[in-house]
Length: 436
Image 1 (cartoon, rainbow, N blue to C red):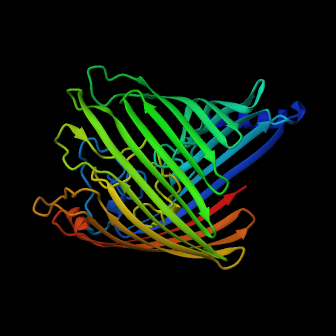
Image 2 (cartoon, rainbow, N blue to C red):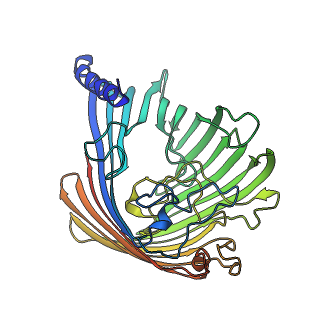
Image 3 (cartoon, one colour):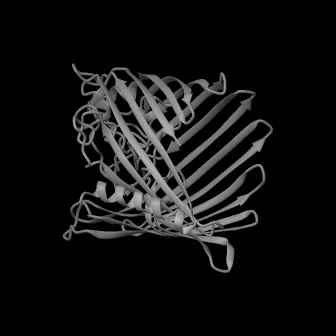
């Protein structure tokens, strides 16, 4: 029996049995369809058109990767549609002392690709969540989650899910957690290229300040001996809301066919402020992820993440908002040269159903870029992006959204072209998303 049939049978059985067991049962879903047009398809894939899953900046750059050519060639413009449907079944007892969550993802496929082609296919199933969350006996302030679950850590380090155990407690204004998660991986190099365990250990703590909070976290990955130390905070002053994150990455990465141990020293900084005035809000922010200035020396200085999604800055071209999490990444920048990003955006609600907005983004690398043309190296300015967006609630739970942007390439953008020249890029996405 296929995984899809097993999943459906399990869901139906649980849903039918739940009322008899006196559980509260809730279905929820996130059904997302999106269509996109981009004038330079080569930027968004290294293996052909119609893909957002292999962006040229989405690589773990402990060795310098090749970049896609930013000079457009004939036939590179692309139009495609994709779908991603997620569904969750949540069952809990009447006193909310225990709950079980089962989550699935169907799709994450382009229209016409395997699983979304003529006739359809059941080879599109992903187990998303499967965990039990329960109150610790004799301690109502603490809970434990066991299974495949959302990890809930900093959005610049690890914002997806993982299989493991997490202890959470809230005592007054203080909350904290301890977690252990496991990932089975096959090392890229080494004499024994066999499946091995990569254990992650995490601790975080937050203190509620009323109008804001301060917090800290530590995440350690055992295989590469990498450790993230983070501080984060948020606050409010009248109609101003502000927040910031500072992360330092330390460790020792085993790299290359000779299993060379290389020191990792990197950091990330982010700060932003949002002003809310009636139905409008304006956001100003800055993100800096350190880059590596010399790929041949004995240390790596580019900041890496575990698994994050870089949407949410108002971009339509490089980190498109409507791409959902089709391209989760672990290096938020071009090549291994880091990122220096200034972003400014504004949104206004026209009614309870409609809103419009616009953003400006100034893209730079943190270190001089190694371009495709050997004669044009040493620049950091990638370019300027202007993006507009709008959304409309068609019906309860159903929203249509439009995101469009134009990137005006600068000197470093030209360096990514094979002849020291590049083209500007236009991209637009239209999405129809139903949440219930």
